Length: 316
Length: 316
Image (cartoon, rainbow over all chains, first blue to last red; front, side, top):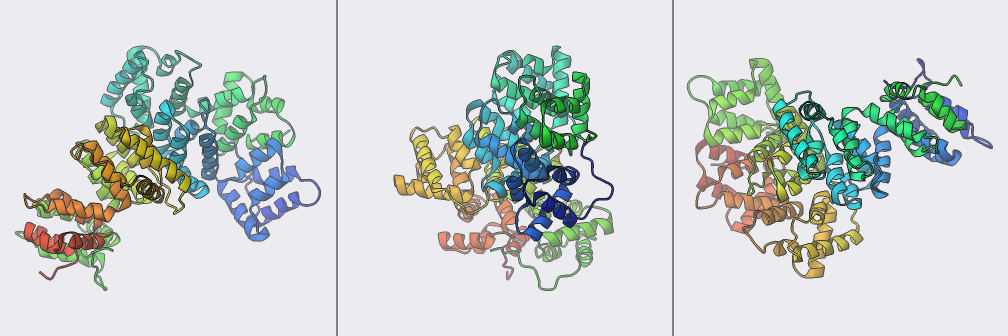
């Protein structure tokens, strides 16, 4: 499901460090060499490289990358090199402290990670920012968004497959009643979406469709420009099918009106080791063009090269 | 700070199991023997005994204890024998599913544990109940209590000592304004109490006292019978001084009008390995009588013996 490709026989972290150091040496930077190393190492291997780099050269590899690279390539290589939990903590911090109603990054992190992964992000947040994630989210949001986002990022959802059909029925009815009343931010709606397990929610949404004829997300489209409704739809889509949701993020990021590098960078960096292969398949079937091709059309040079490497296709 | 006493040289878990099995054998139960083993083993040792018991006798030690003991002694020995996180998960489950406004157990567990401990309780809750703790709390509470309790038990507070005096000042003022308006369940009040780190809250409460003359908890006493106000005071007291709060729980449990065994059992079982020594000292200085003496007056037989053993004084 991942697109990351790691060679069968990989050099030692020490050897990788030497290659990276070579890439930084002299006038100019050898981006191709950086890509050939970092784009083909998994999280544990990248961590070992960072540790070896610190031990050998007395500084953080991220610092050198920051110094030696620029623009979109820099942002992607930095984000990619981080450990997944550190990366999510960084993305969540940016999203929380510069929060605006159209930003869906907190919802992405809260809903498209396992319970254990989300907890590890919260732990990494302590270390990196000397505060808690929920503390920053609560302090920078308000009203309905705060009511939704704080429990969402504080959740530790049960992950067993057990489903209670009695609850699925009663909560499908509850959601239907609240949606009919346009009580979208009702505390019962938020309770259900933020505390129930994902399998339980899937059962509830199925029950909703069976009982009331429409998918719940269809019924939440009464005002497509309402940011809170869009946030609720994002929660539901990320719980039901993160790959489909993320395909849309990528699709919109490659819009003909201009590329959204932030969204593209984030999605590729956070999913290359997870499910980017599935996202690529969904993209291909939805757009009748391979994602790599769309990426090539919209991006350039080293940024393009690193994206393609992380997408698992470097035959360019 | 703990009262638990563990002998310098302890028998192997296997030997302890044999003693326990002997205590269960024949007609009647040898409670003294149970106490002499279990009341003098720490959490890791008790866990090893449970594992050895399962391996040797093919059943859970807790099952045998449930079968062989009765009444208050049974409740205490079962609660004590559990691992701390399992015990808290059990207590939290009882408190959530049979929730009533005067129950403070969820607040105790949320506020008198470290962030990491609280998280481990949430993980144990998944295993034991196939649901999440916040899911049960949210489903069984409502209104202001839900607004307070769900974020409280979902919190993963930052635990560093850093304090931001600017925030302490502005949030002391915020709390004062809300309290003056009797807006006790205002979402800003709940945000501050449920997300800020404990050192930060201490600074805020100190600032409150310095700036406005009264301790915040004094000002929350406008209606001593209001359960929500009492819950807020419990949160603040547990954050400022858990030992003082728990001394009061014990003191009230030993009331002359009848003993509250539930509260006494819970406090002794959850704190014997933590800070019961400090709670005893606070009790002695507050009541001019040793806690052991009060316990002896109010309790009987094996329940009394086990309480005294866990209180670290068995010279009776």
